[in-house]
Length: 354
Ligand SMILES: C[S@@+](CC[C@H](N)C(=O)[O-])C[C@H]1O[C@@H](n2cnc3c(N)ncnc32)[C@H](O)[C@@H]1O
Image (cartoon, rainbow, N blue to C red; front, side, top):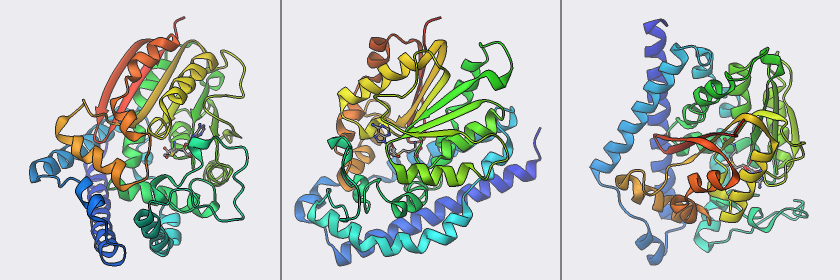
């Protein structure tokens, strides 16, 4: 049983992050309306959420926090993870989030989503990737984008992005418990590891396992390396690669995770990423995907999902929210598929047959 004061501290922290995020977004929207007012069409495309819908979102967030706390209490992951916010980065880069805003507003207003500074290397990346997702400066291709990313995602999810990522840990831990032998023999890959938040959680949960992460962005991998190299345990191995073309031999990993990638991929690439993960998993290996909830999960939240694809540049999102990921997992050969959703995210856990 964990200290009840610690629970209060966790709830207060989450509440504080939520209030701050709402204030941030409200100010941002006001400034956007002032300096780069939306066109009539853009206005028409954004749906206003009712008080009931907002309450539903709020309740789902509180439910997520309860589940997060309960998993730490059950010892699935150390309770320190609940308080592991990157405050250094927040104080260092939060002002830059605001300085970056006018450029973002301009891209939103002009619907300009292929805006890369001339010194950014764009050779060799797939076409679907070369864009300013979220209208963010430099897409995923600069150090500054990597520095701002985690702050922006936490603000978007009212301080609950990490809590949503942590929902992959219990199913992964349960899946990996079927392998016999010491933890140091386990090999786990995080596909599209970004700045390394999930890998850090995996390290907390599996201190001795061999961890690997791949991502397409060299800048995000540098940022992940900066975060993970502060940990006393073995450094996860990072590589620049595509999720749909993994640089690993067949049947290498016991577990593979993939967080917040699928909604940014065209449908056929989603299937290719699943197929590759199937190939790289050992028989009996566990695959866990975390991404946005989908249209059919909660009709009340559908307008919020549709707003997301309108307000941010997310060209594959509308297809994603209707996509049958379960069918894709079955097509790849996975079995024992379990599906759940928490707050604004959905989770698929699947097993490669033994
Ligand atoms: C929305 S971010 C998610 C990052 C991280 N998993 C997280 O939880 O924040 C999407 C990430 O996927 C990477 N990415 C996009 N397409 C990819 C692909 N085909 N293969 C590997 N990484 C990809 C991007 O560079 C970016 O880091």
